[in-house]
Structure formats: structure tokens, C-alpha cells
Length: 267
Image (cartoon, rainbow, N blue to C red):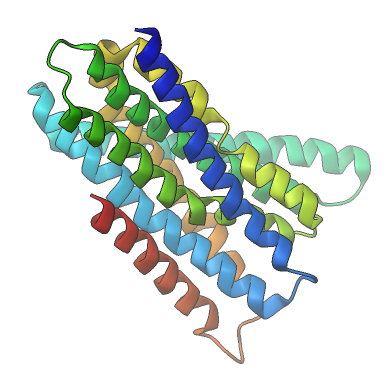
């Protein structure tokens, strides 16, 4: 059992490292150019929208169908709606905290609101991904473990890891847009992936039990990501785009295409 836990930990540390590499792209911004940051913010939105289906909803439906319990469409829909409702409730809590801070500080704190929502959504997305890697390696402890099943688990880790590169940028670039330093944007961006090693070990330990709730967790994260992308990031990247209304929109399309390509190509 220890060997599989170690493999799950190493694999998810690898996925976190690629998240950190993605977050490190913010270092190349010597100064916050509005046009460049708008298209990168659009790119982050496209990544989140694509990941919500290809990385989360589609695997949730497939796992729910294999579980032979509730209909897969009910599992995916329920998890998706709960994820969106969770982020809506979080938004209300953050808004309340912001109003309290405004009343004491005498100035609006819009930055805090956007930053908390963004980091929370990406972190929620990374938890089921870490669980998926942990479950894949934890399942190897059965007597039917073969080289083929080991390669399958490795491919899950590699696929999720490569998808994490644009997701790291999806956190650090908007933080840079909000005026954070490059160093701080990178540190917070890579920290959003630290939940994956923790979730990976938990998934390997509780493989039988986690397997049953993973479809709900995946679709829950999808609902959270869609709400944040549509409510927060897309309106933000479209600010001050009167002269070039499609500039940030092309970033959304490109981000969606890149994430879709990675997911489909890596299976």
C-alpha cells in the first residue's frame, strides 16, 4: 500500500509543479500592459470553460455511468448546480465581508472580492483532479495490477499535469491585472495547485469510497468554474474594449481551443 501512496504523492507533486510553471508565466510581464493582460484574462476564461466540460463534466458522466447508481445526467446536473450555488453563496459571503471592510476603511475593496472568488474556484477545480490521480494509483493495489494499468495511471497524471499549465496562468495573470507584484502573483498562482498532492494521497487511501463521490466532486467543480468565468473573468477582460471589441474575445476562444486540444489529445 505504501508504494501506491508514494506514487500517488509523487504524481500529484508533478501536477502541482506544472501548475507552478504555468503561474510562472506572469514573470514575463515586466509591466501590466492593459491589452496583453486583457487577452490573457480572456485566455484564462476560455481555459476554465473548456476545463469545466472536458476535464470535469465529461469524466463525471463517464464515472457515474460506470457506477450503475443514479442516472449519470442527474449526478452531473446535481453536482454542477451545487457547485454554482456554492460559489454564489461564497460570493454573497465575500460581498458581505467586503461591505464590512468598506464601512471601517471608508473605501471599496473590489480587488479582494475578485481575487477570493478566482482562487477559490481554481482550488476547488484542483481537488477532484488530485482525487482522480490518487484513485488511479490507489486502484493499482489490486491483484490485477499490470504494466498496462500502471501506464494508464501515469497517463492520467500526465494529462492532468499538462492541463494545469494554463490553469496556473489562469490564477497568476488576473492577480497581476489587479496590481499584485509578479512574485506575489506567482506564489498565489502556484499555491492553488497545492491541494492536488493532498487530495491525491486521500484518493489513494480511500480509493473505494472516493470512487463513488468523484462524479459529484468533478461536476461540482465544473459548476463553480463556469460561474466564476462567466460572472467575474469574462466581464473583467472586456473592460475598455470599445476600440477593439474582439481583442479579449479572441483570448477566450484561444484559451478554450488550447484546453480542449490538451484534453482530447491526452484522453
